[in-house]
Length: 104
Image (tube, rainbow, N blue to C red; front, side, top):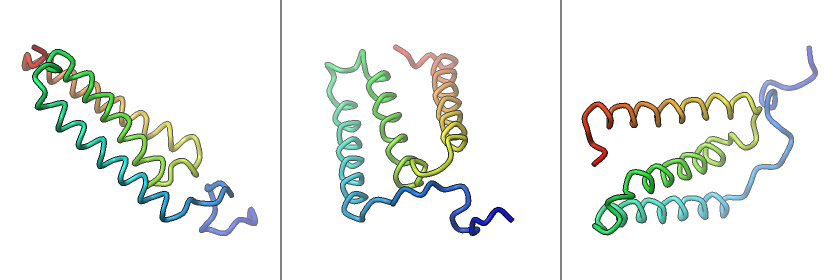
């Protein structure tokens, strides 16, 4: 036996954040969602729509997996697994947009 309990195996010993912090992250995510909707309806931003929405998507993804999925407190290997999934999703989105001619 390694001496670690099953509940703490694979997790760092850093303390988790408070409920107030989770609420703050949720508010930030709501603001980013509102920005996504706003960007979609502002016609002057149409040429940059894809890039802006992708950046906002990546930021929201990072916040969710770091804090709500507690990835910030887990092994780096798990971070790599989720980052791989993110890059695969971005690739699929870009590929589908290229196939269906939705870039312009």
